[in-house]
Length: 373
Image 1 (cartoon, helix red, strand yellow):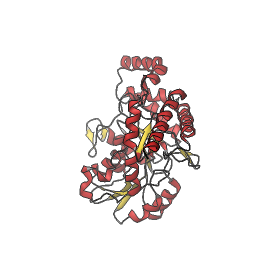
Image 2 (tube, helix red, strand yellow):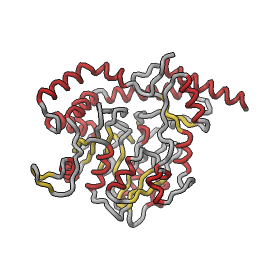
Image 3 (cartoon, one colour):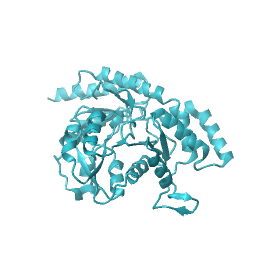
Image 4 (cartoon, helix red, strand yellow):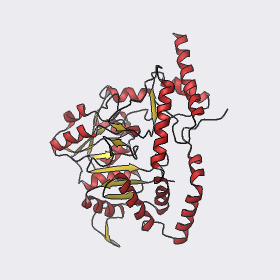
């Protein structure tokens, strides 16, 4: 029985092999392994793709979030409002600058920050808001921005899972003061290693982020403040430039596969992802919900189908944040999603035959539950 992998990066590489190896050879021969023209070229291309003025390439999405907060001078005693339904790096960045994360619940359909919960979380200590575009679905940015503007707060978009996604016709990353991306290999636009970027229309933020990523050097060996080694290596920039040309077509293939899953599973007892008319989701994940999640996942595993759980425990209930005092039940929509979410295989190379196999196992499991009742 052939396995249906959760992600098929080897197939993607096969289509890129010649370009990637040629680029690697050129970089090795030039010996320009850090920064340089290849990195600058990617920064320009990604800024143009996102329709913003500046892109600062970095070594990870976590670093991008950290520098975004540093560039806004957020620190000890400050609060930053975000969601708990996210990869923990969103909260790490807040902790890295000594600030306190304040978590709000998500919308049950979008699975992103619920604007109805946002305003009540803002206090005199609040210094920024970080909505997360989860699973490729944009957060409800018009309402979030209106609240932020009313309170005079900057917004940092965590777009780590949403390369190319659009909200009301605009690509994510254009709404907040800063937006942050991850290029982890599994992402819609993934490097061959670690990578990230910070984008902005604010030239002073871009300039400071470029300084901070390179040990805050004003010139070689002269340092203006505490800095970091957050540079992206040249090979990652080259790979990302090669992949960026294909991103829109890959995203379109993901959209097509998401629609096919929905068609196959329509009418079942599984809660399927919402179709939100104001947004163009890029389907980093196709997540169904089931109260029998662990049994469903076991059935799929037994049929040779790989899945993932994003995420099994929300950030506000993770051990490092126990000191914040959150309890089970504080964010009920987030907590329910963590208990029930199951990400199915979705990627541009996934065949309809394999998708039908996934759906068949899901529907057969549903029938077995009905027989048990």
